[in-house]
Image (cartoon, rainbow, N blue to C red):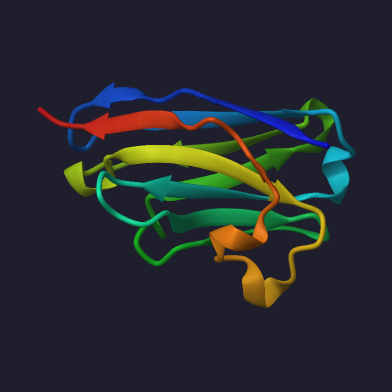
Length: 126
């Protein structure tokens, strides 16, 4: 069983940057697909980015392409989400999720992931 702990959230002004981290423990990190999702107040949890266990190339949601970059460090059992040009609409709780059996067509579906972190709040405001 995998435990996930996110960090790096906070308050930032529009146009600013943050880097989120998600540290994993308790499992074979290399065998897991890991993803970032976010959930704004009153809204559903939505896909942000993912990196599969079998391919180091990240997938990003259209809404964050060119601004966010996900990366993975298997030696540290950690994934990162570098966020730049942040806007108020990026305000949300950001969650890290992992699963060892995700197929490509299910990458963006939160209900397909078995393991979740507690989330970290990102607030973009003046």
